[in-house]
Structures are given as C-alpha cells and as structure tokens.
Length: 250
Image 1 (cartoon, rainbow, N blue to C red):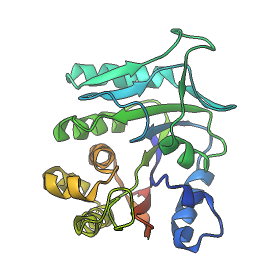
Image 2: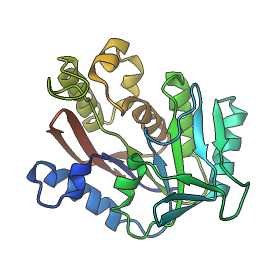
Image 3: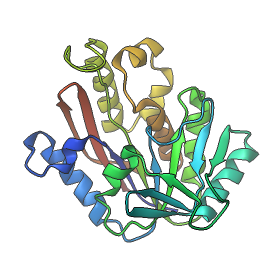
Image 4: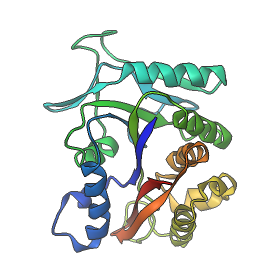
C-alpha cells in the first residue's frame, strides 16, 4: 500500500538552500520528506547496482555510505521478487559479503542518497536499479506490481533529465535535450507517462537522460493507483536538467 509517490532529482545543487535555480524543486523535496512518517521507502535509482538486462533489488541487510546506513526491508523485497517472478520478469536480488548480519552490506549510491537526505525519519529502504536493456513493457509491468504491493511504503523515483544541454558539459550539446525534457514535463503534468513507451530511441540516446527507465516504472505504478501530479517543478542547471513532482490521491 503506497503512502506517497515522489519523483525527485539527485543533483548536488538541491542540497544548497541558497541556490535560487532549484528553489521550487527543493520545496517539493522538503514537502515529500515532511510527509514521510517512517514507513519503508522504495527508491528506484539509476546509479545503484545495474545488472544488464535485469532489474536489481538490493538485498543486503544494510545499505551504507560512510557512517550512514539504512536497513533493507527484505520482506517487501521478497514480496516484490515473488510477484515479479510469477510474471517471468527479469528481477534479481543482489547481496554482498554474507547472507545476513553486519557484513551483508552494499554501498548507497548518490541517486538514492541525495533524495533520501530529505527524509529525516527514513530507516527501512528497498533500493531498486533498473538495467537500461530491460524491455519497456517489462519496466511498466514491474511498476504495476509495485503499485499492488500490500505492505505499507512510500516511493521515490530518483531521476535527472537530459544531460546534453550545454556544449561545455561532459556529454556535449544536443537539440534533443530540450525536446526530451519538453515531452517528459508534459507527460508528467498530464499524468500520461505511459506514452513514454513509444518515445523514439534516438531522442533518448541524444538527450542522455538518466530518467527514462525509472519513469516507465512510475508509469506502471500510476496505472494501478489513483494518483495524479500535485506539484511539478523543473529547471536546467549547467548541462543537465531536473524535474520534481509530488503526487496526490483522489
């Protein structure tokens, strides 16, 4: 049972209260964090462990960076894994070290760490990493299974948008960056993310987002829960863009 859904970026700039370019995005992130009451947080991140052709569920007991650790909700992971396998989806559990105990630990990626920093009551998490080779219908179906989970949780879809907005950026410039962002922003606002299923592959390759795969999972979630975007904010920061959205239930 989903308590709240938040689509949040993970650029370092959102951690800077004085950066006016991200003011509206920070507002959404702070509000999402304030509405969290300690339930498990599912985080779908593009920067955690990615296994080609698979969707990874981080199954180590602890997910850590430096001295900060979160506990994995293994019962929720098992429920999602079993549901996925019943539909023959390419979902795997990923662990390291020991099967359980203190040495069962995996690193916390920045795609999870930055949005989680706004959720001060966060303790239990389930970090998910979709491989970019996973077929679009499979990502959508996986999202629909998240939407049907019975345990109580909230969800963070961690995503930055196009990364080719500047000639000076590490990925160069492409006119497709603006096109991709315009499409995504429109589909988020109109609550019609399912139409990303048909987006031309060249647009994605040229715009170089790290959002497309997570957004298809979000589309699947929305297809089975009565959620719609409540607040949306967007900005371009240097060479890449960020979009945040909080969802309400009617």
